[in-house]
Image (cartoon, rainbow, N blue to C red; front, top):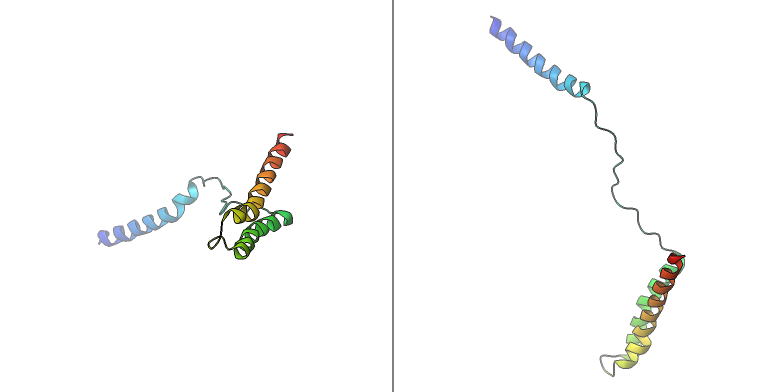
Length: 99
């Protein structure tokens, strides 16, 4: 007769423990979870420079056809200005950050 009541009381005690014990313990401090790093913000001029540095060598490759002829004109007139422009931007950004 008492074993049925003890089982019911044990189940009630377990259920109360499941619901009450987490509330009695101190909750962990709320930390702001950042899902991803904020994206880089590009200015209009930087976006334009990226597009031009992709399209300029492609246009020069179509025009000069370095796979058929000598590749030196393509390197000097197609890739050269892009490398020179980004190198100049890199140097100027380093000078600007030194101040």
